[in-house]
Image (cartoon, rainbow, N blue to C red):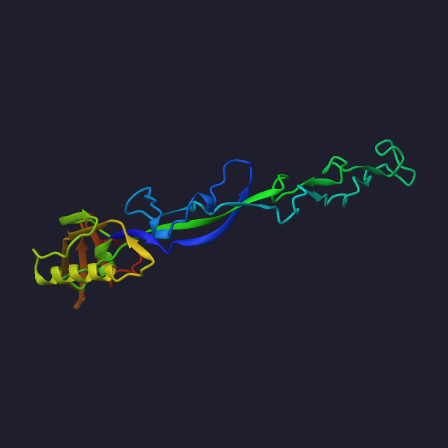
Length: 252
């Protein structure tokens, strides 16, 4: 099992500029993706994060309000007042609007403008390059068996760990029989040949021995097989002869 970076990518981002220090190109060259050290929160677990690439930030005038810091109120269209909608307000107005038929806009408090939503009324934005990082636990299995039980059933149960190693880079097994040794070499070679957009951070290699009992029996002169496997003693039967009986049929 091998975790690693997956396809780091640059994204152009922006945020509110609050007048604090801006780490721009004047402070040095921006590092390349693989030169930025980010440790995974936990080994052998999928995760992701994003960080601002050092020395890529700059401050620019807000592209939404052009530095004015405000937008026209969409409720009153910049007038500061809007029609009085009070139920008893007729053609001659009412006490709510003082007889004018219009009331002060509550959205902009009668000013006709509201703070720019893009820059929150600051007039400027901080732009930067954001690095997206993903950690992926890449798992490969190979099942060696002397039974016809399906591979996916064997992989999903417990067994005895006959060998386990964890290093920055593990080496192929040589102390088992040829079947296990060759499978170990193939799996590690597959991970070594993965995309250059990924980097291996840690490897874990293990051999698990899963007990499997294959039982052949006859019922009504027909032959059947079932399996008991794993430390959990799971039972699997592909064609249980009493599957469609009227009562409750179980295998134990």
